[in-house]
Amino acid sequence: MPVQKKPGDEVIGATLNQEGLIKVKATRVGNDTFLVQVIKMVEEYQGTKVPIQEFADKITGYFVPAVLLIVLSTFIYDTFAIPIAVLGLLHPVIAELCMAMSSITVVANANLLKRAKIYPSYSK
Image (cartoon, rainbow, N blue to C red):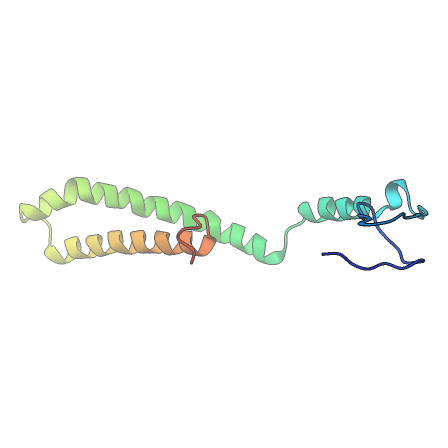
């Protein structure tokens, strides 16, 4: 978006002159330029974590193993418990709870993907 400048106004690097001539006096060079200052700030803040990010990392440390445990238990249930329930060797209430946990896991993971916006088509 073009911005009008008049004589004496300060300009920064990458300023475009759209018409006529322009005479520029370099007041900052090397490490004093705007671009170098921006790069330094970005490098400084990339190495730090905000408190909420540390909290999220801590929660993730528990959440991921919990989800993996649920997935493993669902696999074991689907492989062994359903045939056992069909034979009448497993209480129907326990079988129903296991199926409910399986469904809850799928819905929870879908919601996480939607909130994380990993797949843009899911995040509307």
